[in-house]
Image 1 (cartoon, one colour):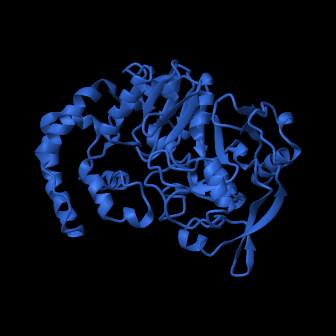
Image 2 (tube, helix red, strand yellow):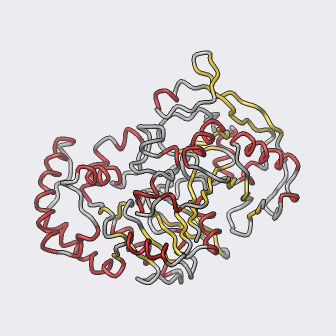
Image 3 (cartoon, rainbow, N blue to C red):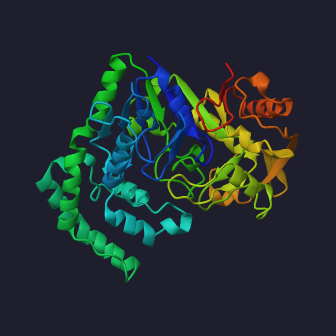
Amino acid sequence: MACTCVVGLQWGDEAKGKIVDFLTADHHVVVRYNGGANAGHTVVRDGKTYKLSLLPTGILSPHMRAVIGNGVVVNPVRFLEEVHMLRTAGIPVNEQNLAVSDHAHLIFPYHVEEESLGAGAAIGTTGRGIGPCYADKVTRSTGIRVGELLYPDHLRERLRQIVPRKNAILSTLSATAKSFDPDAICDEYLGHAQAIRPFIKDTVRLLHRTLCDKQNILFEAAQGSLLDVDHGTYPYVTSSNSSTAGVWAGSGVPARNLTRVVGVIKAYTTRVGRGPFPTELDDGPDGVGEKIRKTGREYGTVTGRPRRCGWFDAVAVRYTAALGGADELAVMLLDVLSDIDAFQICTAYEVDGERTTDFPGDAFLLEKCKPVYETLSGWKKEIGGARKLADLPNAARKYVDRLAELIGLPVTIVSVGPDREQTILCK
């Protein structure tokens, strides 16, 4: 039995979906354990592009069973939209190959309104109600789980208790805030319940049976480790544990079952939303940052927002690799750098005149950090056709080797294009 976790080691958008898709051949079950429909995974298969924000990427493989774990927050509308989208594309989706935890929490319309009026705008969230839903989960008295959709009278009673409180909160945030009717919401969600009912399972029990049957499980993280609510650049983080810390709590599978952790990194760095970004290339419309954005199509899968782009930050990735217990690295989007003359790699920070290689987890401290760079030559050659390390130009090999050296982990996968065929296995 093997349990593998694919986790991003930066601020998300590291192309984890491609690695999950690539590794499905060796696994039987794939589990999404955190986040909601605010995280987008893009996979290119046989010339077709699939964009998923809630369903696990592994569902694209016919032999896999996909599980949305209890650590995820579920918008039923988005869930059903993605199921319909995959079925329309010819991907079979049914209760045999997809399960959603009865203990995952539900996103309601008032969560979306609350986020749009509250702190979400200040920290650059996607505005999809993720944060308020997680807040209600922790508050306990106002959280509603997926399994409660199956009990109409109970659900209606809960909403009649919760929605007036939410309306009162929303009215204090804005005089023009929407007001919600609990019975209307209940009727809408009971309609969704009929379509979702076959997928709702006790996924903890399901996964423990999977372990007993000696089947291999692939855990799929959403976002990146620098956005982890406990260990990321707080408060500019997501609302869940997006590092490997979320596996146990978000799936019910003890983390000691993990036998392999693949840390996924871009050959450069990006982030969406606000927050400090030491290596950001804010060098204008004709600068290197914009060149990387255009070449790498660095726009959010879910929102379409342009991502902020910058040089690779080895200080940050060393921190997240250690935090997540990464065994190896997958270097993604190396091809995006093929037309750049020279690269900067951040190897340390300077803070108040002192040099450090320690990463501060708090945003207000990271804002004070100035990157210390080293320079490597570019290769100025198209590499999308490379299928083994020997096919790469020497400068590209040196760049990959230097990343491995700085992080202290072997690079086992290098991606040189979006298609799954454009993948180099280093060992």
